[in-house]
Amino acid sequence: MTTKSCLAPKKAKLINGRAIAPRNAPARVVRAIEYANKIRKAPYVYGGGHASFNSRGYDCAGAISYALRGGRFLSSPLASTGFMNWEKRGKGKWISVYSNPGHAYIVIAGLRFDTANTGSDGPRWSTSLQSTSGSFTVRHPAGY
Image (cartoon, rainbow, N blue to C red; front, side):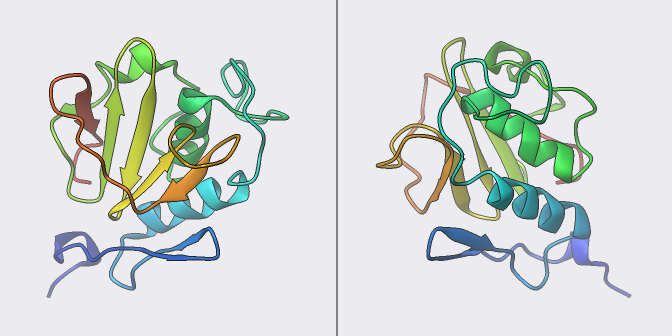
C-alpha cells in the first residue's frame, strides 16, 4: 500500500493568485498551502508575523512561519536567520525553505511563496523559481 507522502510530488496549480494543492499532496502540505492562501493578499509589514502568527501584515519570514504553522511544522514564528538552521539541510520533496540573514521564501509543491519579486506588496504565490545558488541556505521539514 502506498501512502500519499511516498508518492512522487506533483506541482500545485496557481489560479487567480491562489495555490491549489496537487491531489497527491500529504495533508500537512495541503494545510500549509491553505494557510499561505489565507494571507496571500496581506500587506508587507516589516517584522509582521514575528511576535505572533496572526498579524495585520507579514514580512518574508512571518509569511513562511504562518504557512508552516498551518501544516504543523512550526510552533512559534521564526526570523529569516532562524530558518537557516531549521529542520533538515537541502531541498525537500514537498517543501523547501530558502533563507539568508536578510530574506527568506518557501517553495511548496513547486510554487514559490514570497514577499519579493511578486509584483506586489506582501506575500504572494509565483511560478518563478529564479536561481538561488550560493546566496541562500535550503532547509526542509523531515519527510517533506
